Image 1 (cartoon, rainbow, N blue to C red):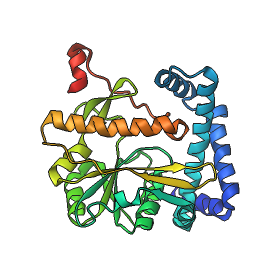
Image 2 (cartoon, helix red, strand yellow):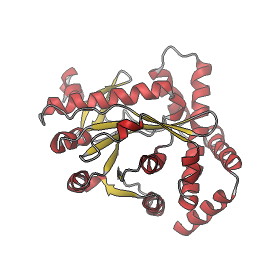
Image 3 (cartoon, rainbow, N blue to C red):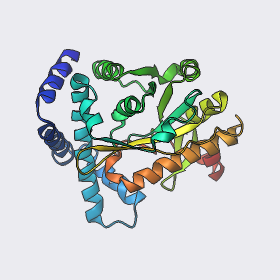
Length: 294
């Protein structure tokens, strides 16, 4: 299947960029309107997170999200063949000085599946810094291999999330900017519950723990699609490490990171993956309201 993916990537890379993006939007249309993959779930989640929205806006945002995801998929395939050149051509870094923070020291990057998260390699290249990304393996080995190869071609070091602690500390000591995506559901044993759109969401504590242990600032970074097809990479001011490694300090830091992600999603709701079952893990009923702070 890896060879099939490489073949499809070459075909997609052969297309002019406008045609490729139109293809991506078409794929998104099929996924959302024909296959209707989790369509009802997506609309129900949007309606819950934005109760003030009329039905028309909920449905329109859902349609735009599927189109956006189709474009992200096509862009990722093109990057595996063409590199990051066309992303760089339309890239503007908003807050580049923040990315240079602690250039001679450790720094972590907070990311989400918002905009084109795969374009972070172009942001690192444009800023002239070394980058790495901590990833969760997906079940399909062929797709996993293709994505990993693409990321490494773009100059990113790839660290498996299941055994990331020591490798990340080593990279931080070497001055590498290590990106961690923090908008995925996780298990109770690995996460803490924080508020996300008014509901408890089980969130990995790894970023806060690494920040505390390495005394590394956290730089929120989101690569948002513009109407003209380019991207604005928003690099926000650095966040100080948690005051301590105690559970409450780690939870407070994780809540702060999640709040930043939510604020960016509210500005660009059509560019987040509402397909993801973010609230799947919930506090145990017998634990009562206090579970949200565990």
